[in-house]
Every structure is written in C-alpha cells, then in structure tokens.
Length: 274
Ligand SMILES: N[C@@H](CCC(=O)N[C@@H](CS)C(=O)NCC(=O)O)C(=O)O
Image 1 (cartoon, rainbow, N blue to C red):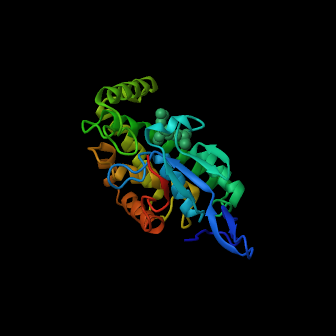
Image 2: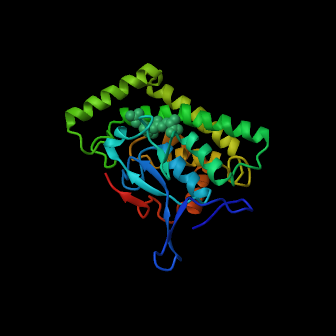
Image 3: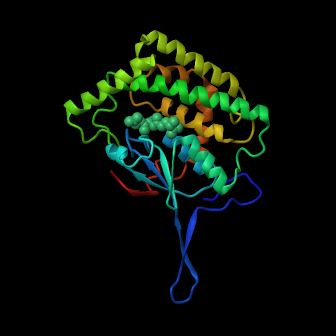
C-alpha cells in the first residue's frame, strides 16, 4: 500500500532486482528494517511505544519496511542500547525522533512540510509531554502492576527464569525511583496522568488529528502512546482515565482503521523472530 500526502512521490526505500539474462526489473527488496522487541501481549506488535511510533510514521508516510524482532538480545546490536533503531541500506539510525528526521531527509516530508512555525511548536510541546512524561508514568505502571505484565512476555523477557526476571524488575524499579516517578503514590500518579490526558483531550477537541484535519508526524507519537494505554493488558489507571475521553478513544480507533487495518502487528513484514 503506497500512501502519503505530498504531490511528489517520495523516493522509496527499495533496491531493484534485475534479471541476469534480460536486465529487466524482476522485483524490489525493502531496505528499511525496523528493529523491535517483537510481538507480545496478544495483539501488540511490540511492547515499546517508540517502536509503534516509528512504525506508524512509516505507514503514514507510505514508506515500505520490514521488521526484525530481537527479543531480550536487543542490547547486543542496538546502537544506543535501546529500541527502536532502523537499518536503511547499511546505515543505522537509533532513537525514534532521529529516525523520523532521517526518514524525512531521505524520502521527503509528506506529513509536516506545510506546518507553520506555531503548529510545529505546538506539535513539539505535545510530543515532549507524551514521550518524556507519559512514557515514565506508563513504565512505572507496568513495572509495579500486580499482574507483572513483563514476566514471561514473548518478545521481551520470555527466556528469563524467575530470579533473573526479578533482578531486571528490581533494577528497573530503582531507575524509576531515581527519576522520581517511582516514588509517587498511586493517587499522585493518577493525578499526573489525568492532567496529561485531560490536556490531550482538550487539544484534540473535535479535530480529526492533533494539529487539525491533516495527519502529521505528531500523530505517530500520540497514536502510539494512546493505543498502548487503551490496550494495556493489566489494570491501569491511565487506561481508566483515557477511557473517560471519548474523543481520544475515537481518535485512536480512527487511526487504527486508517493505518493498521492491514497487517496490524506487522507479522507479514517480519523477517525473523526472537
Ligand atoms: N528516546 C528513545 C527512547 C527509546 C526507549 O526508551 N526504548 C525503550 C523501550 S520503550 C528501551 O529500549 N528500553 C530498554 C532498556 O532501556 O534497556 C526513542 O525515542 O527511541
């Protein structure tokens, strides 16, 4: 499926395959590989919101890609020790925002090119709140959830025995306490999450997308995080708060229908499993 919103077709990340005998084009190989942890929790393509953000951007910008699931071994190859990263014809780029900057440079900017300075500033502010605050609230919820959603999770900690899992969990919890979010009470966390979700619901209002009637790269972030919150497979006060905003729920459903109706977990794009 080729989609995008520019008048000029962006260059596609393909390597053409030629017939040795005739020289005719006989196929094309996808050369963008998105590295992720891997399918998890029933309907998640990956446990990472940032992986879904990049995947959403690729789908919205009409850039073909394949996925490669690394599971717990991700740190052996991830250039910054985190996922996602991509490989484009041998060039590796890590960090979801740097990846999107790179994709814009390489394939054009069909989603954001027409944005005004004010829209860009608004998009930047929303993105930072979601990625740098809501992410911590979500991580805090996941690591403390009584259901222990990361225990024995395919696509992440599946191969760990109980003692090793508990070591990873304790290390993670220490990280969140150092950040500050780990020291909040459940009610304080709930209050902070509600403040952010109320703000998102107000900013979205009746609009189709977060910056108006056309999708932009900001929607890759907002969709990825809202989808993860709304589909949390554990009791979540963030999820309860998000469900109270009909416009956020409808927005997430709309985005799913528009960009993820086909191959929702990118299983058809997967070239290896962990
Ligand atoms: N700023 C990075 C954040 C990426 C990130 O935090 N990834 C998490 C998963 S959501 C990760 O790889 N965590 C593994 C770890 O820290 O060991 C981005 O935008 O890509």
